[in-house]
Image 1 (cartoon, chains in turn purple, blue):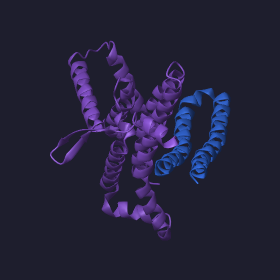
Image 2 (tube, helix red, strand yellow):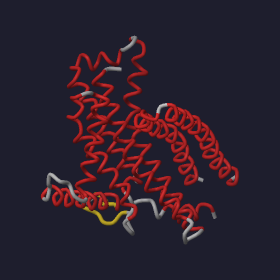
Image 3 (cartoon, chains in turn purple, red):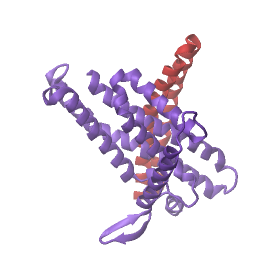
Image 4 (cartoon, one colour):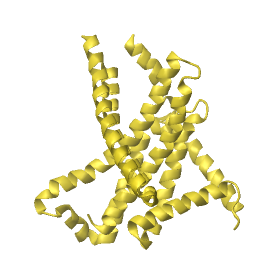
Length: 227
Length: 74
């Protein structure tokens, strides 16, 4: 009985294959990511077209966001931190909308798929390493593995390897757990009871997007200021 | 035999949640003490608290993922 219940629960969460593009299966994850990308693109186009000195409506919200990240980056890295606001802000907005796409009916949020979050994690960490190489030079970058003493090299090396894993697993597990709990509750009590947990899901989506971008900032700043 | 496996799945999540609940309680207590003592530092403390909670929460979620994997294997 347990396994059938789990199957019922998981079919609300797991991505399903919609169609094949040649040999490549296209899942709901991919299609939903495309939809979110289109939404971001259209929103960005229309907001930036009617931009004004006196901000109105949604422009207020976005300026608040930009201010928040500017302050955060300046606090952690000083003046040159502002250079990284495109990376961090994009990550935050994209992950936030992917998380919240759960509330569009019949939509499985792409962040409940490990492939999406693993992609985010790997791309972010490669970017951070490249920033480190650019800031400290190749020699300095290699030297940072041997600090403070040379025989800590294995630990430092494993630390860099584990970063993408923990980044992606954290986002995936949070989103997947939230959705699984709601789906299980929904099977038991279809009305009203899942609502508080879904409200928690909104908060979780925002916090996880924030945590992902905060961790990116911290990883970048650890390379700019040294350990 | 299957029943024991289900108990194992439940115990995995149970102990992980137990531990991280205590840890989160301690972390939040520290942050609240800090804010009560120095309300002007509340912004910095809040950011640090959210990060710390995310780190602690991740451990539970790792065991949750493992539990789900176990459950599907039974």
